Image (spheres, rainbow, N blue to C red):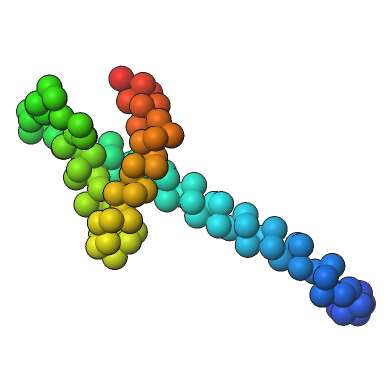
Length: 105
């Protein structure tokens, strides 16, 4: 009975529901990727702190961000460092890392 009802629906009526499902899956993947990148950053920062390494006072990007960029390039972009740096720069412009540091400290 249900299959007959579904067959009666036109393709235009089915399409918005399918697009909504695809958009939700894409949004969930993006959020999961963001959380993984944050975890990678925290691991790199903890590693740098445990090695007692301190950045110079005039650096523009920290050592942990550089390490995170390389790990993200290998993990998510098949070694494409340009895409990873673009992603990190876009996240930094949204002050995600500032919020992380406020939560951790």
